[in-house]
Length: 128
Image (tube, rainbow, N blue to C red):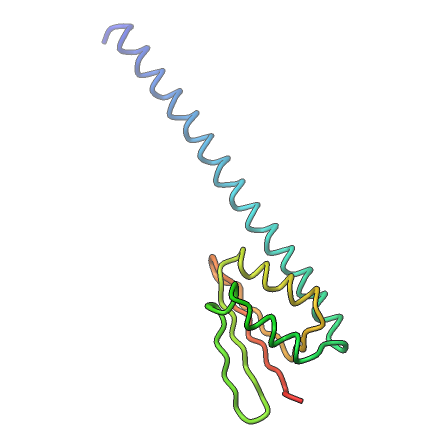
């Protein structure tokens, strides 16, 4: 092998390592952004839990009927109990939870499942 071919091979390895380094940094950045979104959602959910006693059912209906969230919400009413299942991507779930945290919404039990790219909230409300 000539020196020129050896130099090209060395350059190819160098560019390969640089590309690998850049891709690893991009992956780490995206992962840390997702983790920070989950932390933000956890703070908002604790805010909802702390303000449970001042919620009303009317503001809950207003939030649930909002066009931005309606497609992600499924409700099931059995007698005086209403079960609301909200499953959406992180950004929509973040907005929904922020809206609940900043309102006087009526919330019962909340069950949270963190899926890969989605969040699933199951809210059980005893109707008054």
